[in-house]
Length: 285
Image 1: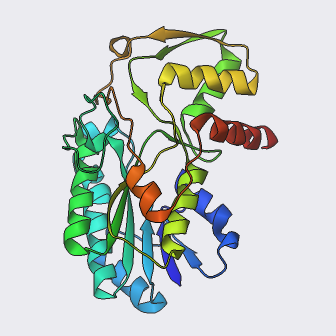
Image 2: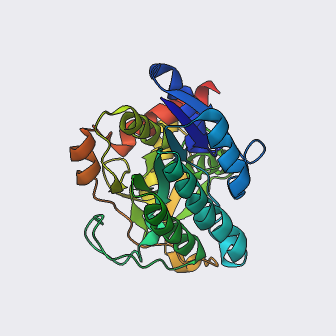
């Protein structure tokens, strides 16, 4: 099986690359903006014609949530129009598609974990463009799997864990919001889930949710990071209103993973267990 992986330099792309040797039956071709412009339909078509892909995993995204409020066209080009192009061309070549999406497609005002059937209602440009990407993807290629995830981190790229570790060594105390709740997700776990789906004989198209098990606020997450890394930094709980941002964050973005767990027989790790693994990786680096 030949699989195109876009966004190879990101957290998820890098984690898929690390896991690739465990899937000898899957040949992964990694690209990013310097090797394949996924907003260029001709370039994507040429790549499919040359490589004869069986599947595409689209990890590429415009993820600057606050900047997306002003750079709307750029965000839409990457988050909506590129998935549309990939889905259209993958369909033409009888290939499957896996599109990575986000918890930001929801308003964040629920009190129970969001299921795939719950009403969407993104607050800002990032969520709106990602939702449009989902919808266009399913229209162009119904043989697509959409995976919504949340609070992604890894030993690669920029993320909350690495930011906290840096700030924790620079300061004696930090204020972190406690009124935003979700599930931290180790990109390596999501990468393993995606590769399990790709290599599974049973490919069931549709929308799915994936994050690590358990629930935490950003405050809880920060406390766990310092505890597990033995960084002596005090964390103070603060309200979101003390940290105003251009884009509104979902107050509640816990995802119900029953569908993906049952359909693909996945074991999803608890967030603190995965955080321990990531911190050990960062210490080695």
